[in-house]
Image 1 (tube, rainbow, N blue to C red):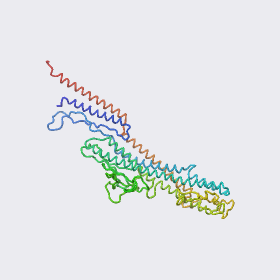
Image 2: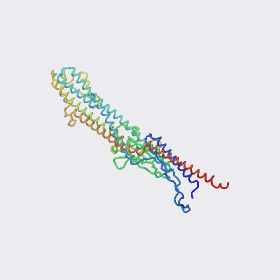
Image 3: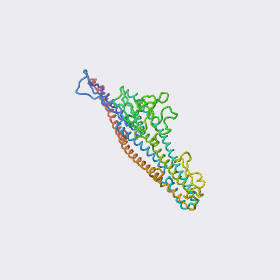
Image 4: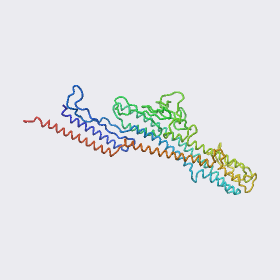
Amino acid sequence: MGSTFMGLETSKRGLQTQQSALYTTGHNISNANTLGYSRQRVNMEATSGFPGVGLNAGTMPGFLGTGVTAGSIQRIRDGFVDKQFRDETNKLGYWESRTDAISQMEDVLAEPSEYGLQQSLTDFWKSLGVLSTDPENGGARAVVVERGVAVADSFNYIHKSLKNIQDNLGKEIGASVNTINSILKQVGDLNKQITDVEPNGYMPNDLYDARDNLLDQLSQLVPIEVKYEKSGGNALAIAEGSVTVTIKTKGSEGLKVVEGKEFAQMRTKSVNTSSDNVNPNGDIEGFYLVKLNPDGSDMKVDRNMVEETGTPTYIRHEDFLDQGKLKSLVNSFGKDDGKGLYPEMIDKLNLMAQKFAEKFNEVHKSGTDSKGDKGLDFFVPSDGTISASTIKINSKIQDDPSRLAASDSATAEAGNGNNAKNLGDVLFDKDIDLGNDSVQSFFSGKIIGELGVKGQQAINMTKNAGTLLGAVSNRRDSISSVSLDEEMTNMISFQQAYNASARMITVVDETLDKIINGMGVVGR
């Protein structure tokens, strides 16, 4: 037979458990707007029935329930949805960064517009056309020179602006690598805290959230794979344990960057160099992994975070998947093979400026100026060889426009502007080593046209990735985020259960009062 006071103990457990549920509901409501917070619930479990199991246990028709207890407090997450979310996040990170890089390039080129290189070339061509019909006109000669200066300035401006953006992309790579290193260290530290707590039977839900929030941020920068390692001791079965983080690569073997409390750090340069080894000071060849010694110095490690001696292993940029912001930044900044969005565009501009200047000079030197002298080089380099950054007008012509060789006669033939026409035709000449293109078609097709296609592709892919991420994010929110309506419903439910348990205690109290004060008083 059960204890007379058994009802009190059962109801007391009900009070305590419902109170825990109410406190958890309050925690959820308080964190309704906290970034990365996952709603929590109390897993209620019925306590062991009476009598217990054993040879000496009493017998009765059935087990008598003894109440409820809070078995655990668990956050609500779906690991599969988390993986989907991170996969889509690093795709969006890649295309957002590429869209931004192309957008900045399009802003510099400013095509089509009234201020771009295309317009400068057109104005230059028109001025040569005017000069060809009136070569004795000093004003027309001055206009041609000024239009030529505008063409050179446009080349110089575009080259300088593209280099500035490229430098900024390099700084952004350094900032991203620093962010990755900081996240890896924080995840390692959280792993340590979690594995210290879990063996004692606790569920550090808020530490799990903090760790998952960091992993979400990391997935925007690089594609990652996460595995969980159970803690020992008296850890609960639903405890998550520590995470092992691996950066996915094109081969079957990734880069292990976090394992338990151990974490790696990324470097853009090998150890023992004069730079900080994080911010790139040249084209990117790949990334090195190191671990930090107690004194803060770098210790070379391989793909599995095992110390290695000799020449450090670096993981080539090509080995990384085309996902994540970091890969996109490097693709835009440039690699050691000379490929990359900005290096390739700068190379095209340099080639265009060089071939255009060479052909223009060749035609100009074939003519004669107004004094009957052979033409000089019209375009000259400010330093070294002619490129988009060095092209400028010959100062002798700029100071004296009469040196402009507009005539194709051997003498100063009045009214002869044939060479000015020939100079104008250079813009459309396909025999200038630009493939099968003229300067005009090379710029509009190989530079502006291809850039437009790449930009449109990047925008479309960004929209697609954003749409997919939005769908996955909504699905994850439907599972893990706090719904105030649901919490309000739960709060009322737990409150009523608490009130009912309290009422039960009152009933048991009145019952005991009858036994204690109302029985055995006959004859008093």
